[in-house]
Amino acid sequence: MSPADSKTGGAKAGTGIGWLIGLVVTGAALIAMSFEIGPLGANHRDERVFVGVALAGFPVFLLATALARRVNGGIAVRRAIFVIVTVAVLMRLPLWLEPPKFSTDMYRYVWEGKMINNGVNPFRYPPQDPSLAQFRDELYNSVCFKNLAAMYPAVAEYFFALAYRICPLKPLLSFKFLFGGLDLGVIALLMLLLRRFRRRPQDAIIYAWHPLVVTQLALDGHLDAIGIFLLLLAIFLATSPVRRGFSVAIATAASIGAKGYSILCAAFLAQEIRGRKTIFAIQVALCLIAVTLPFVGAGSRLFASLIWYGEGWEKNAGLFRLIRLALSAFAPDPRMPTRIVAGTLLLALLIYLVWCRIHAGDLPQVIPKCLLILAGFLLVSPVVYPWYVCWTVPFLCFVPWRSWLLFTGLVVLSTLHNARGHQPGWVVLVEYIPFLAGLAVEVWTGSAPFRYLSDRWDSRG
Image (cartoon, rainbow, N blue to C red; front, side, top):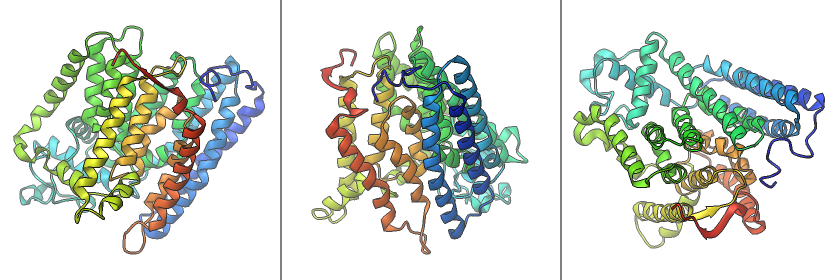
């Protein structure tokens, strides 16, 4: 599909009520999926049921996206948007009301938000510290890594504190609805951006109804909703007619401060604004320093947990695992050499994307570049949890990268564990082999997003 095909009002689009009826039917099926998943427990049997339901919902979701693309005409499009937003809310609502099932991260968020509201620096004291015994309640047993101090960035900690302050008696519900509001805000920003770039606003269905996004952000309540929303806000501001650099810098720094992935996109955002790029970089850095200052009392512990995570953790890795296996023949402990090689590959991709020119019609270069760098990061990352992949889904509303879309549907398989708590070996093969096969075809045929790339350097770099 060419960029022209993805614009509003494609020539082959239909205006009949049949497309809308099909959209309603597929939406009802996805809502039923949420109601099926909600009551599940956190055990091996329900884990398999969860993965099965999510996988079964993925082709229904793909059918819904195809139906949404067929809707044309002002009234029909408005009705389709109403259906998309309504179903998106109804898919999430039963999951917001349930506790997290397949991740304990939210319990950690609650603990750190509680500590901040009680005047405790979460970067200084791990949850198991004896001096914090007075704060332990019924949720404490579910807190993960009790021996480690906080590892989430400062902006995320502020959101944790806010969510806990809103309703300390029902903190899980408070966190769910705050993060859920940001998740819905992503949908709103996507529709605004799609209209701005003369795309179909109903293409926001790719994010709004995606089973991966709904289950990882609404059910398990991962903080990634904060960073994704702030990154899209930065893109919205950077591509506006005014393009005030300082507002873009604040949004960019806030997204980095929520979860560091957005630092990979900062250079592309700088290319979109008017003004000196060095000033933008200084503004982002100063904002990050400012939000981190209240926690500097932790001293060397400020980044200790994050460093521990980066040095030793590996889970569901793709290309990173292949590099490690290749290097194991030459190094007795290939962990650090593998990280060096993976980091070098990512840096090379970042430099290439900064300096190359992308031709995608009316679409600003920041969007396909963000998609490519985030996907590249995940491919060379030692850890690829399903909720990490949610960062790439908003950009699929603009760039029809089919093999990556398939990967976003299969990555839920990484939720599976055997009786010993380990991920079965076949899971990685089923996740990555179809993607890599599709990727090879796309590169060979020059399909999106690779047909957008040019050998010409971008003079703005």
